[in-house]
Image 1 (tube, rainbow, N blue to C red):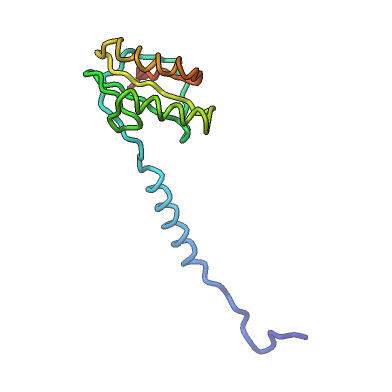
Image 2: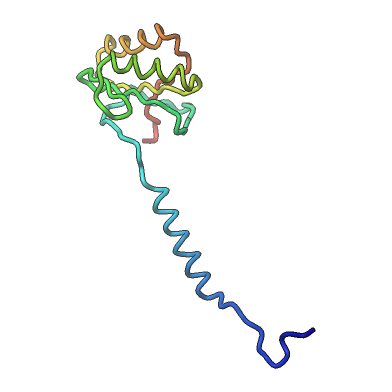
Length: 135
């Protein structure tokens, strides 16, 4: 049986497909550039050329600014809230990496207080973040 006798075969126009694909590509590129991370402006302590870069959505960031205020994922927190969050994190996802990002001028007593909490909870996946020498 020949169904195409006397009729032109149906042709799908591909011009519109390339336009749609191009617009979709632009949309995906723009969405991927959005930075959802809340940062606290600090002066990094030193440079590290060989620092291991870890980009994972399962990271917990502890920022300490020069006045000694601790920020938990960008929100100001006290040490009790840090202890609660880290304890909960240790129970639910023990492989989560904690990044400690401290200002160059913060007193070490403030950093040590956070480290004592992590030591008390026996949290072992901790990273000190320093600025790359190229930044």
